[in-house]
Length: 94
Image (tube, rainbow, N blue to C red):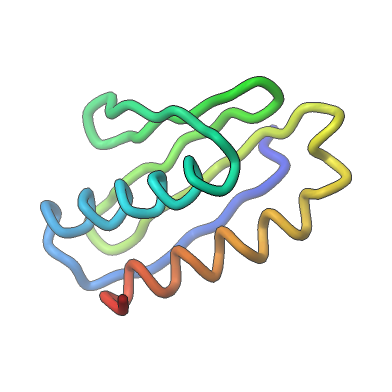
């Protein structure tokens, strides 16, 4: 079961939604030192103590993050920051 689940609605084309998902992953990589790779329409990311997926759908993106023991204490802070980034990026704002 994921420790953090975020669903972000969007009105982007499939190509633009995947580009937005990549921007979200790049931002998470910068902030949390994550690596990511596409598996179809699912962006899979991981690092020691953190793993998850970002699924791109026609009208929404779903993020699921599982945190290791050491990261669970920061779950709410991580969730707030990632949710803010997703809202901004999927809305097409810089």
